[in-house]
Image (cartoon, rainbow, N blue to C red; front, side, top):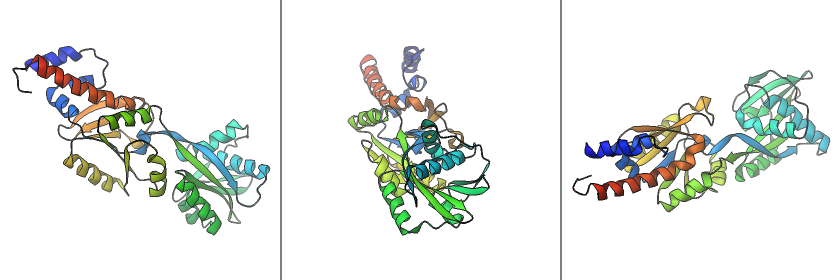
Length: 300
């Protein structure tokens, strides 16, 4: 009781990460004993928007054909219901001054949308959406898509409906949030393992996220498998589980739920503060040592 009163007074008004958690001795001890950090979504490490890195027209390789493909795809991507994965194409079109046409789109199978422009129907999406709409990619395009994935990027396809014809392939890449590299390096120094659970393509995940220092990527097929993996990790070690409140409405302004399995303690930390996680662990270690010296007659 004496120690917890001291902690509450010590951390009152503190701006330290998870200061409220540190006011509880049990939670402080758990935080100091963390051995593993688990990110349950790649959205915790990457900006939601993508960047278009390459455009490959399928037949006509002229610059006019390239720009036309980007313009049509960007008009589809600009629709409010289009996946955030398409945002890099829209931004690229805006940056080079291509006019964006207003379109209403419908979702397709896989990750894709379909819309009508100048009396012609177009579809933009991943390989599954092309398959759903009966658009054949062909061996050369499939090989190109594999090369794009091997670089850790997402292959997206633009096709015309009636007649069904593939028009272009796009390579889009996620961007790591600022300070993430430094945070992961610091966790490495603290000998804390980092795991990312993702449902992305295994090829893309391995190529992209293994660039980050000290991270282990585990691909899970669905939400049930993800929960089983989280439980398995948490049961085998003291782990900090980081997940956004609501992935469907995820943005940099939504706080995270950070849960320690042992005590089910929770603390909010916004996405742009993920880099503070190592500091929180270090603060917990230092505070525990301070308490041992100050209250040497008590068993912590």
